[in-house]
Amino acid sequence: MKLARTAYATLTLLVLTGCASSAPHYYTLTTAAGPAPAAASAAPFVIHVKPVNVAERLNQPQLMVHQRNGELLMSDNALWAAPLPEEIRAALTARLERSLKTTDIRSLMPPAGKPVIGIRVSVEQFDVWQGEKATIAATWQLDPGQDSGQLICQTQHQRAINGGTQEQVMIRQKLVQDVADDIAFSVLQRRCG
Image (cartoon, rainbow, N blue to C red):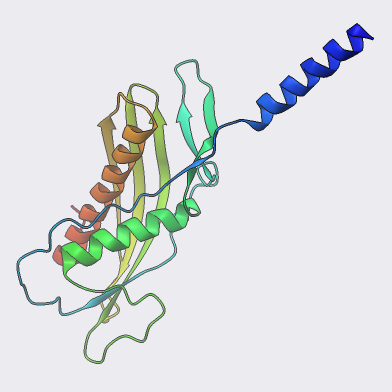
């Protein structure tokens, strides 16, 4: 009888410990907008950032981190607030709207007299190596829509990383901003940077 009570108490403790795991934390790639820029005229065009393609191995709800031993850690307690392709699209769109002084029309009718520049982005790499670096590699296609040919560009960025999940998210936000800045350059200059 004493053995049964001890076993029951141990089992109860294990079940309660399992149920007491920490709640998940949700992260986003969209950053706070900072101070408004000085008054400037709006761009003579609008943009349409299309759904972002993300390599299948990256398209996970969990934040993924490469460990030094080659293991890929996927935490059930560190999750993207939305599917990763939508997180990237939202962050790119916010940065592009701000830097180009224009609007993403998404599913709206374009305003009369303003050309629509279509932007299609594909992310092939978006990785973090614990205590070392974070990288992004992306390709985008611009469609100016005015009898102009399409433009296809690629970019890669890397940043050092030392900290935990909070720093990893901040560095990933900066990497997406780097890509958005490259896209903005190609929109304005009509060439790859």
